[in-house]
Length: 318
Image (cartoon, rainbow, N blue to C red):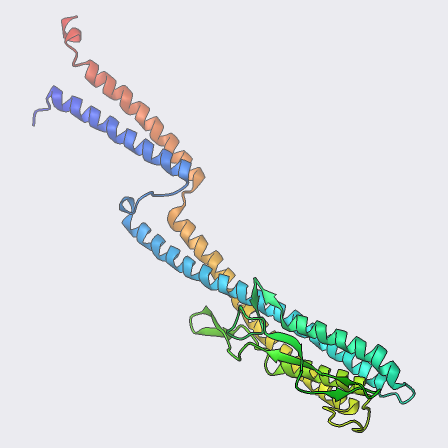
């Protein structure tokens, strides 16, 4: 086949264009540090990359859920721990009140007042929240679970024979348990409703306060007494044990969440590493390839220049 001058010129121009395109592609890879910009450039790698990115988004979603659940459970653990401390303080107060050398006036002015302070603190802990959501309300996240009030329908007599209305506790939440997914087929209960454990605990503290106010120590002397101080001690210890059991259960679920969270972080790191292998450019290799391609382009320019210049009419005329 005869090679015409036009064919030589066209080939030279095509070679120049192809080298320029390769240089532009390599420059883009080096500047973006990505092997490709569109799926059409590398369909196989792009498909694998999209699959990995989808998996990574799923892992991120599970990880976010684990973090929220962990934060919720840590707040629950803190509240239950503080309620246990209140149980210890309340038991010590009741034991002091059971001392026969103490007068009813001292029980009322000192111990009952301090017990009321513990009740208010217990209610405050029962109304703990995370990001404006109450953790002991069951499904009623926006409803404050515990409210202290006065039983206006019941009138009792204090140690001096004066009328008073006992304190009441109202629970406005429900007993719903919220399940959260930490991965495929891995569910955990995030919350712990305030009924019955915390509500019963606060009610037992109220019974102890009432007994101290009435001066009912070992036997009922002023009917209708909700509880004697001796009975209140037994109830407070029992309800505090229930709080401890709930905290133990919450702690076990916290360890489950922590283990799942650590596993998710490990898988996320591995997935990101695989994604980097599919998408990212080796910078040193990319620069070397770019330098080599630029050298090749300069050679193509020189050869093409000579080939085209040889076709000049003026060269034939000299």
